[in-house]
Image 1: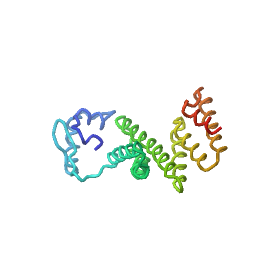
Image 2 (image 1 turned 90 degrees about the vertical axis):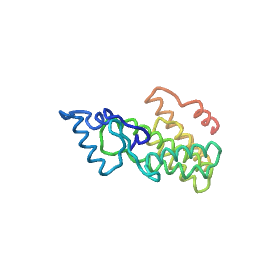
Image 3 (image 1 turned 120 degrees about the horizontal axis):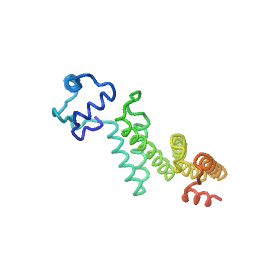
Image 4 (image 1 turned 45 degrees about the vertical axis):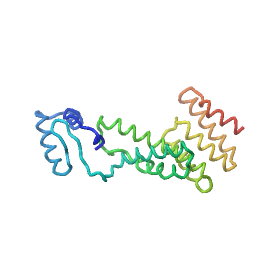
Length: 205
């Protein structure tokens, strides 16, 4: 399903199904699995295979990628209310681990992409809600906190949190967030916040 836009070779499928301990006749075993699968899912091809679904089929990871694109485009044109909805769609889909409980090397890259989409969606939600203001400042704060939790070395989460506190008039809280980041980077990585984060800190001072 993750590769339904292209044909997948049989050797790729063999490697995915049997990373270790392949049966004595792996090709025959794969054929048996595919025969059973064809009873449930429409498959096209023999040597190279592709899942063929109806045009109106909904696949969550594909919807997340599409929503992320729409949210990015809305933010680029400063259409904050249009960015909020798609970014939240990404957030709700990508917050869940892809095929939870499965441990296979072929899942590493799709999971990395989905995690990146989740982190980016938190940035977009924080930015859009900060610009909308009012009651959405609470949503911006939650998104910024979530980003700091899941990606503690991604400075944007701290910056959005600093801006939320500053918008509420809590400048000291904003400065404390910066100090937390500064200590983390110094103790864990031996480095300092990025110039853009330092510039925000100076503006708060």
